[in-house]
Image 1: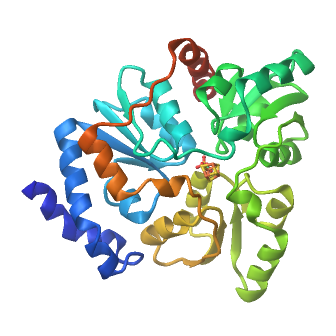
Image 2 (image 1 turned 120 degrees about the horizontal axis):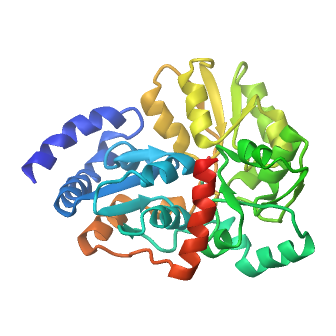
Length: 324
Ligand code: 13P
Ligand code: SF4
């Protein structure tokens, strides 16, 4: 425990630009406990870019976008993986690590995209469009992945659909991601009316207003945004692509058209960049907190279980994506 305690002051140095001292004082007890519990149980925490800075920068072992978390989940040595992210991310980690215990701090941390489609819906689409390949966004349940040919993330969607070599693709369930990739590639997308409840709220007007109020701002938009929003942006890419853009030093003033914590986490790493902060919160991502992570590691619950008959088929779709 002493060892963990000595970490805490230097941890604060990492996040002092985005977490005021009074707020930090409320975090230290949980951070100490989480660091100690991880050691005791040989556990690692994987955190998505939308996690808050005290989680992202202070207790996590592996951080990144959905693609990076899936890739890294394959290489984890620890006995236990705790997902600081949403349920589909934990399922993906479990699919790629069937022998390990994968824990979710809050099973209610879902996703509006994952909730928009069922396995039966995918079977109906296949019947309606026989022979057209089915590319499923990772933001789906294992049952939906099991009905799919392969998965994609926003980080590799273009490469995955172009790699199929067909002029039509069933790309589900994110209608806007499919339309944005169709605009980039010219491939005809048969899609689904699923939307991210965070990204669908941004509007072109909002971007025009930001440009007027903050001259020279570079606008980076996530491809889950509606196509008319992406059209107003200077760059569109996954959360990892946005991080890379900021790290490239090409912009001194940026706005990230995505979830709020993304700017906080990047502001920690890039004090030289000014972040304009209109953003939308993901209520699912925000269910993961230091107390919920601590409770998860204290009780070793709740474990993600995937029925074996689904897991075999869903794993195939994820592995095909990673191999593509
Ligand atoms: P990426 O991190 O893969 O860009 O995904 C964004 C997202 O909304 C995950 O829930
Ligand atoms: Fe789902 Fe959107 Fe939240 Fe990501 S940000 S978990 S896509 S609702």
